[in-house]
Length: 453
Image 1 (cartoon, rainbow, N blue to C red):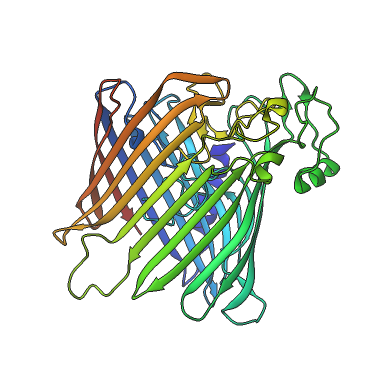
Image 2: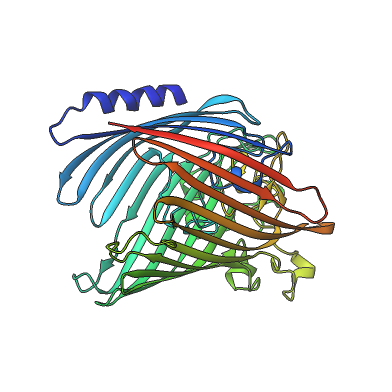
């Protein structure tokens, strides 16, 4: 099926001739080695599902056609595939999509990678629940591209929202699991580059075919329940006691402003999976992030530090300290008794990569009681050498009812230097995992890319 979609989108992109149409293509190749059988953390994390812990080689080919349709609106058709050597040595569909966007709304149909909003520096992009760690999931997405302001102007009070429906096409415990997602944010923006948004993200894994219970609830009535967070009819022996399907979400606060052409953003994601999290009984669990980007005039040269981020992830409480956990148990982030593959796609975590999945052929989550301090810096060394540097300090304590006797404390640095920039780009990558109780894992890699038109 993936090959058919790829051929279809390539055919459409090649036959839609138009005077203003633009075509962009890209080839990317990656080679990396390490001193251990698995590569260092940042050699496989947040690589859009294209690499895993055992990947040494990867090749990607992508093309897209863009057609302007009016003032700041466009239609885009794209497709791409990659081969990755790792747990699963095979050719995989990376993207195959149709999209339309204008200054207010957008729609995506198919399988499309999400945009990177932080120059590759964040560990979770804009959401602790949906990072750039796993690959794109096929479906349909409707969303606002900018706030709808009540005043009708470009400031004041407004709203942003999205509605998305996907289907998991990977090999998972519950086959053909569906994914429902929606978001809603209230926004205030003044005329001086200050904006604050407060809202919620809601995800539900539902329907599908279970090897234990057969076909799971998938009617329109069931959809209305998962849309509202309703309880199911208990047709699966108590596995859906809290709500129909595997529900999770987050409360969010996003603040951004610009001072002297330096963009500043603050993000807070509070995670929840059931009623205790909804009532914030799992505080202080969540993600806290502060980002700076220097967009001042470069007359005096390119800055050594173009962008900087610092993030703190805390997922250690999981409602364990809440009164009543002794009766109904604590949380178990990204895991589920019915949907045992959990919050993964192709056995890679969809949310923050600091939560660790089981390695194939096992499914689900291995470690989710974790915390991490993460920083990222990007800029130019000596005004000529682009670089990206990541540094994470992770504490891994285990999982619900399966705590590690000795917690893992791992430092994971990563440095990328762009040695050649132009039609051909060559990047040198150096990374490591440093654990005081284990032998250091060192890695080196080369990433090559070429754009063509």
